[in-house]
Image (tube, rainbow over all chains, first blue to last red; front, side):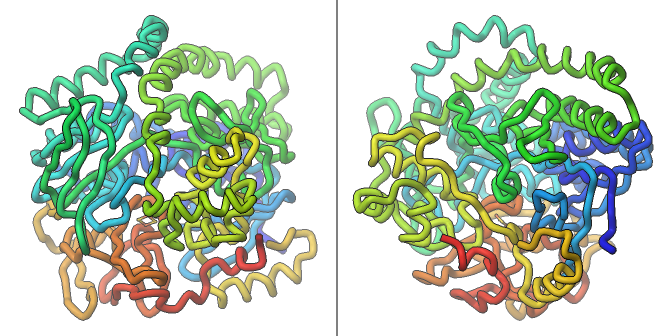
Length: 471
Length: 107
Ligand code: FES
């Protein structure tokens, strides 16, 4: 018999921790499955054992994670860390792998709480060693106290860019420049949403304080930057860009880029859950009801993998999904679920008021619309260029799945996690279609690397369990 | 490129990267160790042989594939270091065994 869980939560970030803790309090046997050995997800990475001796470097928002982890630890919910989820079936079979061993478990209810990933935006030279995401820089800081040694250039758009800049300033890292690619027009467009944003949490105030910190440290911040380019042979040597009508060059061995975050949907897409295109957040996200229930019975989503609302909202969305799970499992009735959900709903209503402002101000559209030169790599894994994708579109490829069959773009190890949206965008533009019309790549399990030997063992095991849908 | 803010202590372990022995904190991932030790790149691509380094550090880009303890195509950003671990840069496809078994039939 496969091991069985009442409530399996995938992801140990704010949504997953809050959901498992609340479910456990209502008497549900909850387990959190996570690929990291430690709790906290990426946002609260290493929260229980920070390698940083100065806790002020990461700031107050990071410490919110402590409360979530304490509540989780006190709740009696289980934690299976260092565990990859490489498959989830519509019958709620879950493929797990840890230490090179794979197994299949089952669950009555599944909550997917796998968070977000950074939006991949191709530009010339973005595959050079020395170019990485700002999120990657932050993970090195949080999890390993590893920071740039000879200075770094930060470029792109979005609140995280300024947060990491402020954290680096506090950690004594030399910032060669912050290249803000937010177009000036976005400030005008976003202005009408500012009054509502000011009534949410203290997001705007915090953002401004990061900028003050950066400026006070003497860091050069350049606005309305365009046409970013990473230059180098075997590795990054310089960054060039346009600003104020001129081309500029900064010699640097390290460039960190950020273009906002998008829901991590590879798991939800691989299950066949219905998704919708969110034009405002410029991303796909699973279609849900107000409890996070998806189109597949018994499988819910919560947190940033369901739409980008931020870490604090994620915890509350996780609680809503937990209440619904407790109701479905017979621990509480509908009235109790609704009553307990009221404070979470009130928080979310207030918290979300900041989003329209942020979404319009930090819209990635101008970075995405920059006409990609034909020789820029779009698919990093299979090394497919923008020109090849355009050509495939002209030859009649209607969307990313056809381009994948034609060019292998999206068939490499990342399964289109990096190139999927760019390929879709290029085909949409070539065919005069919308993103919703061209659709998205459907990843196939295993969605995490798993060796043939391990898989063979699992297939034997799965064959012995006819109730589990096979990958 | 990168440096550690932490000083060496008894909690550090010894690993081998491309034949060279290094002392690294025991809670680091292989990718962090590779970056902090200025290894430069962790693999070359199967198609053009271009050097690549970890890009996302959170398991989505697969740029950090390395051979770890004899097993190719492991995501260095997801694997914590361990005493005696042997890590190699992965050149070209290495051995693609084990990756993407499920996708080949697709499309
Ligand atoms: S650095 Fe992106 S998957 Fe490891």
